[in-house]
Length: 192
Image (cartoon, rainbow, N blue to C red; front, side):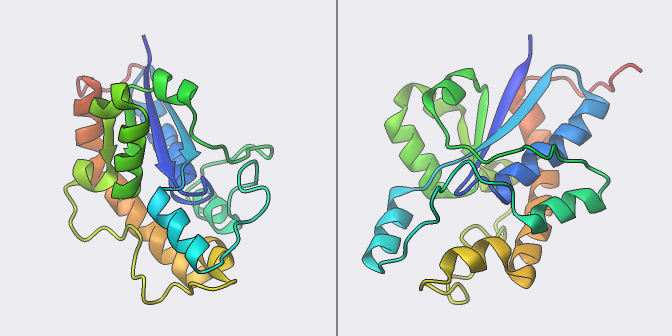
């Protein structure tokens, strides 16, 4: 029986999709039966802040290609991405199928746990699993422009996204033993 992990970030265009393909590539070489997917979920606190500042979300917000910077980072690691991949919003079916849900933001964990109380024991933040206190999660808010360039900056600014992906990769790597433990999988190399 497969174990299913869902990574969640806001737009499902940078962090969560990077985790999906990066760990899928890594786990396929080591373990049988781990399914990794990703989705987006906007926590209410972020929605409220953006609404208060009159910052509009891209339309459509989901069903978009991954960030070109994310795709480039994966390709540099030799990890291919299907051309038709599109971002998706977290939904009840994904939550039911998941054995483990890993969020980028603590507010996502709180909101999802409140909406889907039956799933709260399988929802963790990446910070909890990596035990990394310095992980940048909604990063240095002082550098993010809370104006009409917000989404372009957060999803396509080379310096910003590169920094986020470096930190995210380090954090994912550190979280792997906890992910494996949460799934109850023994650390045995896959037979070739």
